[in-house]
Image (tube, rainbow, N blue to C red; front, side, top):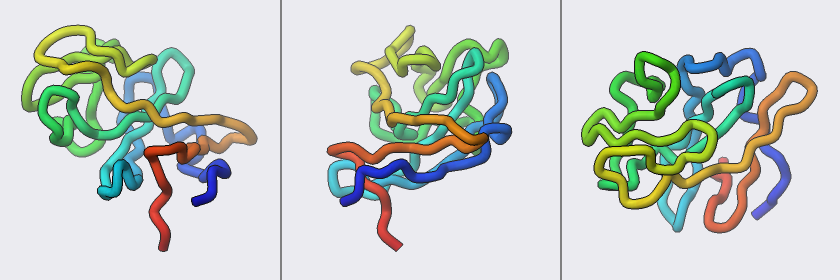
Length: 122
């Protein structure tokens, strides 16, 4: 497995409090959806898996923010997470979201596979 940065999207594709950019990762041997968002100018990414019950969180495709753009919400359980850390902020959480390391340079957002995350091989 390579731990080199993997291009994810153009930086302009992530808008503060806007739609997420989805991508697939291998987490603990399973293929999982992940998502990248922008909050207060910074790009962040997490597994699309609620910590309450391991199911995808978006209420519409690629929509995770509440109406204020300040919280990431699980559409099924109402758990709220802090966009900058993935920490549980309220509702039925069992810990925080699994964070995925991102970097942004030359107008491109990259993600970094680290154990237990792996890139999908095509």
